[in-house]
Length: 97
Image (cartoon, rainbow, N blue to C red; front, side):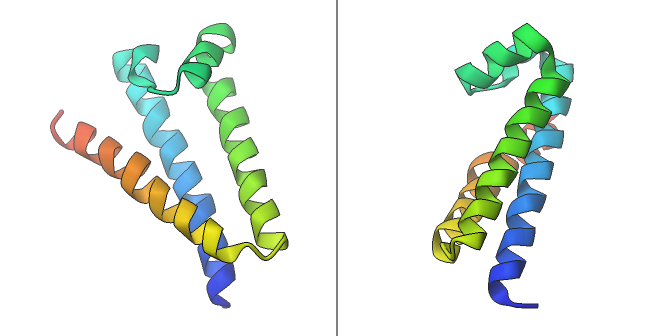
């Protein structure tokens, strides 16, 4: 597998993981657990599940667009950002629970 495809796969997995962790946190702590005000507002309006599905599909589409345009370094940086800035903190939240 090419490195760029591996990065795309990791990006998509991080999106799915972030969505699952966010959903679990919102179920446990309420919409206030979501730090993104826009996403929290949509969760309040349409519910957590549809809002997260839409947000993660949009993010995944953006990742695929970056991949098809050959912007692999940016995709790799975004993947690292999600691992450190989204997945990592959720793991810490659930580990201390």
